Length: 359
Image 1 (cartoon, one colour):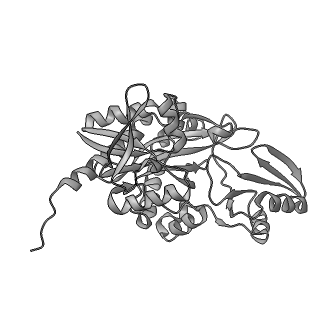
Image 2 (cartoon, rainbow, N blue to C red):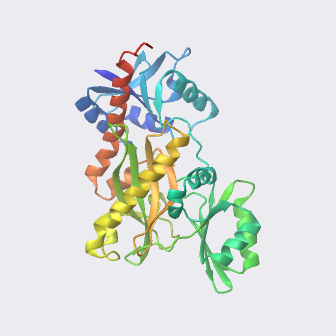
Image 3 (cartoon, rainbow, N blue to C red):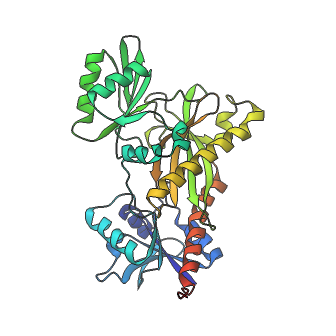
């Protein structure tokens, strides 16, 4: 049985060693791996030994992770979301010796937007987005009724603020803050909110609603056994009424996408709407991967307006996947584990093929 490396965050590894659950469903790696003839070796970059030939790998024994010193697998699925410079250095060096998919990529949302904008075919999916500055914020507030101010690098809704214009008043809505203020007060509040960090400003799309609340869509886009981009699943994330955030960690809730679009999209147009979302997601993934060929596992946050037109909100590398589980979409949840392992299986098979000698 071939081994495949699964690199996980340090905290996830520690939970697995203790036998505690996390958003990574480790038994799926083992179950699907067995079907494909793969044995997963779990590790964090700091488990790699000096010389970078061997690793203190961990194997799932049915209830927890147990250690064993082994050779570093030839193909590695990188699931590390956080890491210090040392860990990133290990990933960078491993990427030169092994097939590491989902390697180190640019995660700065502004730079990602610029990369995607280069393709005229997908510009219609991209809300107006610029780097934060006070002057740009004033312009956006004149152009759009809803504006988002968000960190250039961040996840799970941390640091995201929604600004709504109501006449001469502005509603500033964030995870633990909700205030109505004048324009001058708003500008001071946002300046303090941003501090010296890199933020961006994004046009707020008038999203479709479910039960009176806006929702966005988590689309899992992954490479499959044929090395092609495919949608593994789509699920709606309904915003929390208090902070208007759909992130599950910020009070949002997950529901099946078919349930969320039913009140807004006519029944005979629902299949077409879902197909348009898939097509947009795959086009965006292809464009992003032109710049970073190692990409293989993306979690896109997309939205639709009341006519079903799709828009990209942001691209997340290494989708955490639990929104599918929370929505009860167990088949989709499992598929998000299957596609990367099938892709890894294909890479391993290619690695074993003898290289053709030049004629």
